[in-house]
Amino acid sequence: MTTVAVAAPRYRGRPAWRILASILAVAALVWGTFNVVNLLAHSETHFTRTFSSDAIAVVEVSTDRGSVRVVASDRDNVSLSAYVRNGLGGTDHTAQVRGHRLLVDASCSVPVAYWCTASYTLRVPRGVAVVLWSGSGDVNVSGLTGAARLSSDHGDVDATRLRSTDVRANAQHGSIHLDLLRAPLRVQAASTHGDVTVVVPRNDSSYRVDASSDFGDTSVDVRTDPQSLRDIEASSQHGDVTVRYPAR
Image (cartoon, rainbow, N blue to C red; front, side, top):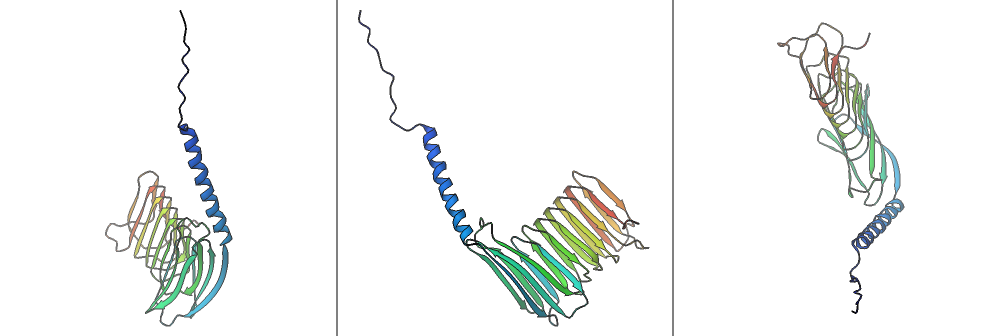
């Protein structure tokens, strides 16, 4: 009896791991090239501008990436200091007075250009209203008496020495701290992932307080009255919520 050996079949196609490795290698090469170009396009700019405050009642600042800081004091103009970093595609930046508003805006023309940053510091008269937003960065305000709208998608919101009667703050991924020196009429503060703290002056004022947290502790240590005309709403989905007087 004759035994015939049968050879195992040989597959002509590439094994799956080789195909995957080739795809990953090409992707890594493209990504590496993109980062080199992005690095070569990197530049930094610092500049300051001054605006007469005679016609400015509202200051609006919006930046995709970067911090926003507003310092209010007894002054008769608005000073804008900017730090802008550019990468591939650049950082689009504008600052202009339109009617009674000073509009400052910065955006990233290429979303994955990580050098894109525009951070602002503004020194303003106490009485102006502010509307501030950062997509990725902290928002800070101090000394203001005008209305404040403060928000950050990825960053903390911090307001100190406020004498504003109307303050509204929002953070998606960050904490909120509001420190008021004068009893406010309206405060709204909400964070999705972060602590919320509202500090009001220790005096005879009472407040209608709505404080809540889905996953965190809630503490209210101020004089409350459900019929009060002074309203505080503070909430967090994932964080502690505190409404209190200043520490003694």
